[in-house]
Length: 461
Picture 1 (cartoon, helix red, strand yellow):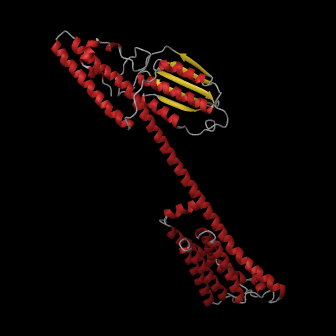
Picture 2 (cartoon, helix red, strand yellow; picture 1 turned 120 degrees about the vertical axis):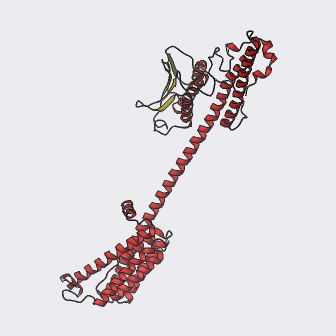
Picture 3 (cartoon, one colour; picture 1 turned 90 degrees about the horizontal axis):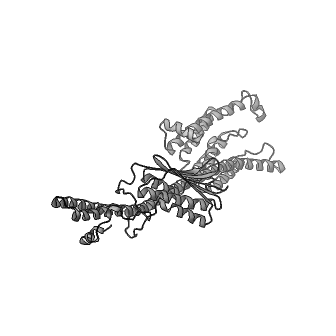
């Protein structure tokens, strides 16, 4: 409801707290005037005979009525400062209430609505406990002034009747002010808790995004090192082949030599540019390049998982075909991460690994049961491992989908295209050995004498 009122006021151009308080003050003034005129009419009717008034009785004179209405409007006007000076606002409205006690006859008691709003504001905007203390003092002060002006006496001025009436008047004043102040304090506490929760949610979101970004950057650094190993190997082969061809070609030696020189120069320039790009991706060149795994290493990876206590059932479908080294590395890393997550989140549960060679794509599917109560079964957001796997899949033009299935199993599905934008930054080459991507191409087998003639051709970044 509060938000709806704020939207309505904003549509009317009232967007500040001061403006909203001014609108509230005007509304309270109108309600106060209407209530007083209604009470005056009731007292002047048959119902007023109980209080010594009734039809034809003059409750207040015209001048007194004008003074009472002016006090009610002044009390409402004090609400304009209820946020900035809540205790002062309460004191001013109580002062107006005392003025009403002076102006009105003893049998007519009218509690101005502005005092209730001021007491609520003291509880909502004053420091904790100060608002309650101010409301209690306001109630006691109002009751004391009422006794001083002779407002007590209807039941008698001595004995138990006097004490009962005095205690009742004091309790009535305390209930009026303290209840309003307590409601205000409750609203302020709830508002503070909601703001704190909102702030915590925003901080947690920012921290999660920062951690995710950090994980992506770290994974990109690892991918940069792996790309360095694969691409540097093939580019170095180009340089070796060019140096060998320069010495082996017999037809039109001069022209062939010039052509080969350009090939070698272009290869070396590519190596230099690759060093620059990889250095920017790494952010640090301290790490030493190392041979990277391929599809031939998948059985060993599965055997390692079994040796660690996992129950792994693997299956290969279709006729195998070759992939670029970067794509093979992606398949290896995704399977490695999926097996690691399966052991972490579902220890002792069986894991199914399916490798499908299709006509246009290679699909790796890893499924494992998830025990109830684990983060995976509760639907928690993916961790950094899934983020890293997704980055790897995107780099080779593939897709990765990881999540909880309707049957309660966690599934990781990697799709790698057979052809497409796979590692455009590195020259693809067919792998002729199963020892890893760093094996030399067959065309690089040249006489040792030719290689010794120009040893710089073997330089890698």
